[in-house]
Length: 235
Image (cartoon, rainbow, N blue to C red; front, side, top):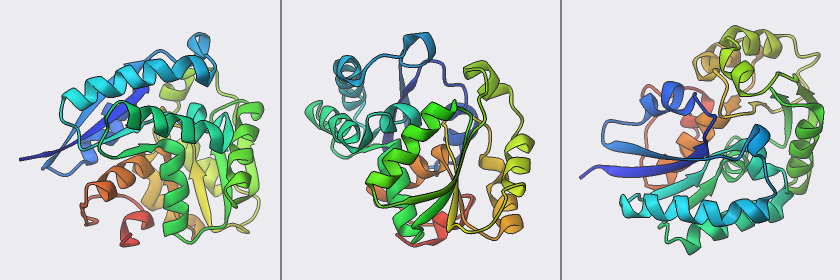
């Protein structure tokens, strides 16, 4: 019997199926549910939580073994309290195991023993600062935080992976333990290994860490075909 991973993603996301789902092992099936929660559909977490519960319940119906709320900005925007509220909503809906993108990022950084990070996002500087606040709450220092101010989902999706590779290579220093390329709606999983080799530091991305966290929660182990130093941690 295959194991099943449920992902709740923004309706505007076009990258999860395109660049993430193909990395799941053959005996793990991804099931995806969408919510309108970004751009003009952005809403406070208190209004989003009932929708998260309903979306999660539908994935519980599909017998998912783990269910993740997979949106970086929304899972970090209201700090650790917001993360806990999202996890609680998933549990209320009956998910056997739960995660958010922010949960996965923190667990990945712990596995890499990374306490200081560089952060690159496609977001506004304000949204990027919300992420740095979340990291501070969780004991992670951000030595460089850059919001690229791309113009919404269409721009996120159409920006080529080389853009993120160039940004990583152009970081002003290497005084960090890992680089986080934030956002589940950008194309960057294909540059992880190359960027790690060039900058000499682990590189994590939103789609990569949720893939890693979901596999970890269902007890899968291995690093075949999977990008980055993260999958070699053994955690």
